[in-house]
Image 1: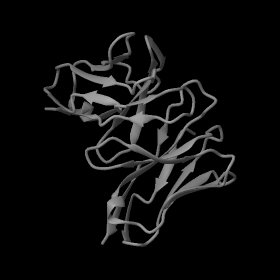
Image 2: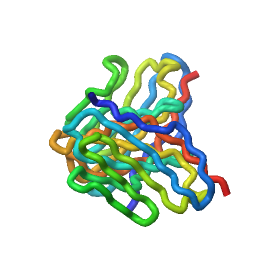
Image 3: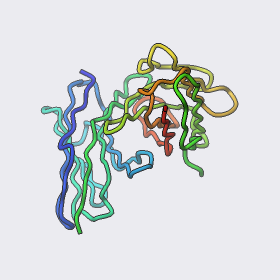
Image 4: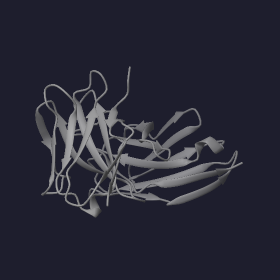
Length: 114
Length: 114
């Protein structure tokens, strides 16, 4: 019930294309869903996050779509660039808890070809 | 404003030795989280601390692992009698608040056990 399942494991997209990464969760108590970007040898960096009171959030080329009834959320990267090549992690946490610990998906390695 | 700092960045230990990993949170942050990333896997929560208190250690192995966040100084993750399976990247994150707030990650410590 604490799991967050992420797919695909790896993704290859041409420059200018749309990258789509999906995540599904089980615990309906989760109420905070961030996406992190990680480059090799670096720590994860927060990209964008959403709470379940909205169905979509957009920041620049990055959009989160959230489907509360299906317990799914996805990251869309528009106009993908070679510099977007990295590993992306979705995560979830319970704001009502007193810890805020993040439960991470398994990660998606994105390669954007020039 | 400096980000989350971790040291050492790389640590090599032989089986049976002790490993000490340090984390200095961002200025003004009093909440620290430790996560472990095994090769080709996502990040797994280990422990959540506030100054002088362990709040949630549900992800910590029962033996050999301990963590502290003293009133003064960095947070320390200590692994006694390391084994090869402890080889991983250990990330620290800090947050200015508890609950589902933004967590800022450090660059990680890559531990290799020979």
